[in-house]
Image (cartoon, rainbow, N blue to C red; front, side, top):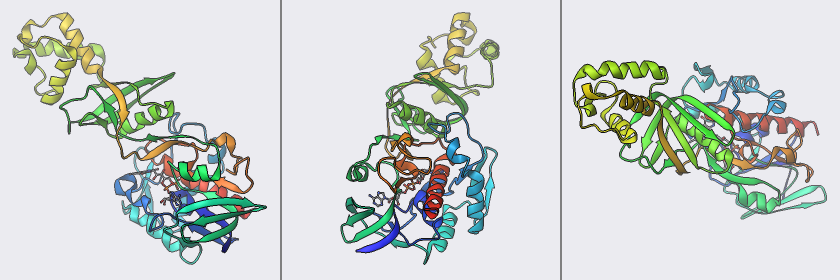
Length: 383
Ligand SMILES: Cc1cc2nc3c(=O)[nH]c(=O)nc-3n(C[C@H](O)[C@H](O)[C@H](O)COP(=O)(O)OP(=O)(O)OC[C@H]3O[C@@H](n4cnc5c(N)ncnc54)[C@H](O)[C@@H]3O)c2cc1C
């Protein structure tokens, strides 16, 4: 039996941050995979979007001020700077290492962890019991005992949460490409600078950016963000509207189409030089106007219909693809104290994605991992 003051289950972003903030006590991390802090390498397309200096209404599924008042993006930047990591912000407030390599984040962290924390990899947790004031953890090849147990195993941790017998909200994939049953034959087409809008329950959301068509659905950062809103609603069902020219008003666009009548071409060629052919075909498919006429002959009604379609391409969301970046759901914050200790089991803490906190793209999910990890690490040190 190995004894530690604190055992952290999972060696991802939140677990690492927690471990590095416990100076006072003997700490171990139990990791199911073969290497600690591995997932960080795939974040931000290999660049690791470490945090963000702006928070908007829908950046998270709930208000987290009570936590960010204690630890925010500035603490993250200072923490990493002290480890030797140099970062820069882009125009959207997203921070990346100046090397543009997530590996730099992993390197500075693992260097600091060396000799500080005992890391046990390939640990599959079989059972956890609490006897008096101590947790006893059995893995496939070890037994551990500790006073403080921190769960940092990320999203979709149902098995572990069931072993611990704690309450949690169902995990649902988030930041994920969306399946739409009416997207056909446009795979690989990229739309830039378009406005995507959704109405989900009483939430209206729109964002300008890039959308990528894929076989049977839509992808891209804006779609990922929209997927977060569907995930938070509990189901991937609803309409997505795309305004292809958000910087032009309805009237301006209508006038443009009136001007293009004089191109004197078959109607199905009127968008040559304005939209990719595949998108022009999609506009005609959705608008259902008869293209078998000359552009000179289109009437006002048809112009209105085409203008409306360009500003409202519509798709029906019917599900999500695999390869989600995060999960919505987990242990509810209402069941945790402000130091993230579970209200019903003393000295049991939850940090990172295993909590019912999910963010949009932009460094928000990692910031929650850093914030929650540091809060728990510091709280344990004050014990
Ligand atoms: C492709 C991709 C790109 C992303 N890019 C970004 C980005 O740029 N910016 C951003 O903010 N967020 C990004 N995210 C999200 C971000 O990675 C997560 O929100 C963050 O890693 C969550 O940290 P965590 O510590 O809660 O969990 P994780 O980082 O998932 O770590 C959990 C750890 O626990 C281990 N584990 C799981 N189950 C057990 C078990 N039963 N026993 C022991 N160990 C276990 C896992 O192997 C893992 O090491 C991205 C995610 C993905 C998938």
